[in-house]
Image (cartoon, rainbow, N blue to C red; front, top):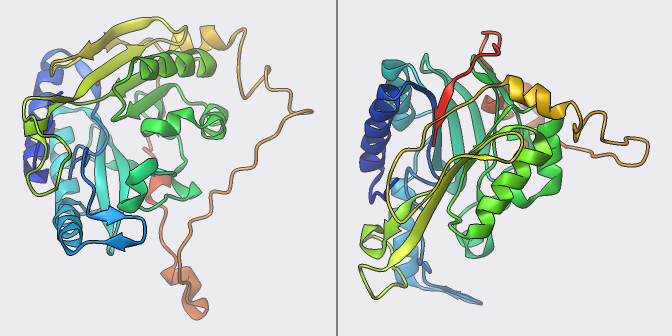
Length: 325
């Protein structure tokens, strides 16, 4: 898909792609990393080692104002879109919690319910200047009518421990909002599909320098320069590409997902099951919600609620949904 320059425009883009996806009988649509509020590609926010400029602080203020709250009005709009078109949506966004920003993604089911929220565990490189680190409380595979969905954002897909955590929770459909347009990222998506014996839906934007928000300083002099060439792709549990990768243009990829292929694939390889050798290897995952301040006298009432554990009450079915990033 193409880039957008404002949060309101991004919500409209979700609606447009949702309509197009439903026309092609899709039931799940995955959108790119930081679609709402924007991936600030090329922005410096006035930072050098040992100093931050006043202009950079103003840029961060503008970026923060574009971010969304979960729950919040933009979530209500996404919920309405999902319910209207009877679609499951996985949407990348920048979440504002207080005055801290997180690169996150939400999963909304086809009844408009928020069934999952992820916060990126480790921002990459200069992303750490503007995004906080998520904790283990959102490392949850969400049960939906379509199957068990997990979301890994961009270079989280390179974290072996994170992957094993999702494999152990029985992920069937792996959603990967990303900003990585390199050929090697497609290789990573194929590897995860084979390693996890799951379907992988990767979504990235196609963007020109002129598509970037004018509110943030950018490092691109040529407005027609391609700053992100896309690379959305859908892969089956045996590593075969079902659709894409889509480069150098905006578009919608659609493929049929037969969850029986997951069981067929795990017949001879199950990374967290019969192939795991727990007598030799083990993984400890801390899923405790973390807060900088806890009031002991009212800890139960004040500690943050883990919204990511809210799951659909419907039993997953072994259907053959169409899916599209």
